[in-house]
Picture (cartoon, rainbow, N blue to C red):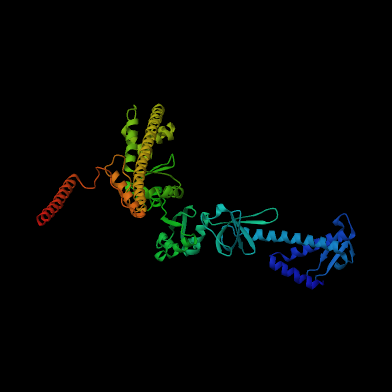
Length: 504
């Protein structure tokens, strides 16, 4: 093979595998040195050097500084195989280095690939000239792709392993939502609208807090788009995942109130010592504020960074009442101190127990002994309240179980009655047998005997003595009618006999 042809081949490899051309030439020189060592059976390659002209492609091998005239074809099969293995190894190393450098710069970007297959729950996606790896933890629950489907994903991490470059992809990471908004909403990409905070449960719901640096741009409206066109594209990409966009506010109270929408919040109390927000909502808004399986309040807590506790007005008032009853009997504690505690977000005996005496001393400016007594009283009262709550919970559970059992019994009785009716219909409309001693039992049996006799072509069996289908009054009238018929027949017979005698 001449030099120019070899250079053309190296150029093609460099373009296809994105490897530097000079690096390929160096790899080829190293391969030729290994082949020469194998050809001369030398113990060390340091005795050999190889240089290749970058323009003509001419290759020269030196042994201990002296030029050695060796044609590549003359090296033999073993030396050629050695050169081939060295070249393949060098090519793979160069390709891995190229992939690592290319995709390391694209971490955090969205890439569109083609689904290839699943391996142990992880999805393999073809992205460009490399294969990406999406573990099950980074997939959206319930989402399934077929081979050849288009997959939009986030390049989460790129790392080099023993023999390949591993590109980790994700569709469940919160930054995937952020990049989708940058693609669909130009104001987000231009940094006119900023996504301040985000909380996501992949496949179910996402909450975003957005703000605008331009007073003329409505952050929420721009993200939603005309008639929801922009947000609809993102929801479709996520397979129907719900997205709540709330307005960012520097005030934690307003931000918590916005994050709990669509529920209407009546009051928000913040306790900075505990990092807890006590939110008061009306009874009809409680289920909306908590959300399905606590999802709404959980996402709101992650979005705002506060531990959100939702109470009804009755529960909030009861907590304050218990706190007042516990603290006021202590000498040195006034109502003004309780109002100050409520303003600091400590609205129950559990809060007093949790913050400790040092905080009470600093905030209320009271003696340490009084603060310690307040904490002890709160601890004791909290234990009693917890026990009472446990008892009420057990009673509620027992009542619920009793109601379920009662409802189950009612359903079982109804099911039995329905089953009896269906069985009677299957048996030809015959009524079910009545209990022993029922006055209709013998009549039912006689009716069954009559049906059997009719089927067999026999005369119907006689009823038992003393039995009749008529009532007592009807039976008396029937007996009188039979007597009159008997008398009439007998009378006619007697008249006929007298006439016969006269004629005779």
